[in-house]
Length: 78
Image 1: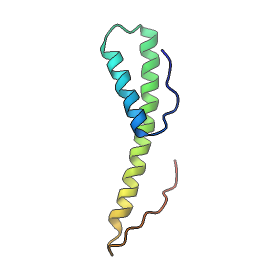
Image 2 (image 1 turned 30 degrees about the horizontal axis):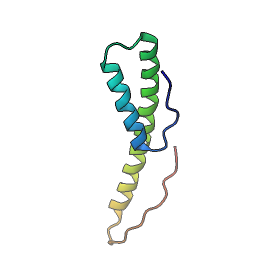
Image 3 (image 1 turned 90 degrees about the vertical axis):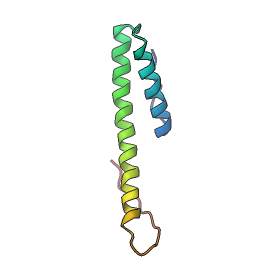
């Protein structure tokens, strides 16, 4: 089984996680392939978590603006 590489965005990573879950649910995946898929899934989970944390930080910044002005400042990366 091949890894799909680094996802371009959250949606792509989530779709790949769903593919992996469906594959593992079949119960006919050889152990070596299942382990490889688990490693890939862990990396995708990490990627998704980082993107969600970034989005949450941006939402919190927007929420903190009390004067009605909408301003979004760049948040420092990982």
